[in-house]
Length: 229
Image (cartoon, rainbow, N blue to C red; front, side, top):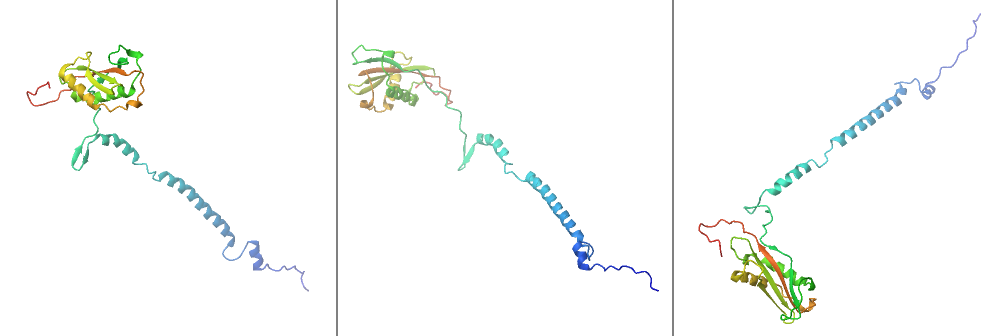
């Protein structure tokens, strides 16, 4: 007599197991997990490498501080050009002449007229600036006495005759031939005025500038060389 019947179920086929993600050769279910781990490691390496590179990257300014620090020292050193040593710019040259303010000595209709003086006279910028410039450019024409001295340069301006002249006035300490020679040098350096373009209220003027010549610095010369011109 046959025993009790048993229910038999068909064994699942291999394709069905693969669709469920289990079974099959090689354990295919581990592949997605491995891929995620690899991607995470790569991302971590990138995050670590980028800041490290930016921190260690050369900025191109390593030598700037050295160059700026060496600049003043290098500029103070003499340069060599064509085998010749050229010294750096020296200090400003010593003051060789000091000029006082322009004095308006006289303004009148002519040289013989009484006229006005001081603030009652109008200014003549062209002649005032030209006289000061000529005095500075002719320091070497001044007397060389080894002592401080002054020359009061007086400039006569005659619009009627269209003439100018320069002579040493009485207010200066230096007079005589040496002072007159200096005045001639100043006169020669005056530019030719454009008479029609210069505005003026009077026809005759006298202006003056007192020039002070400090004691010249000692210059070593041969023994027994004279101090005076």
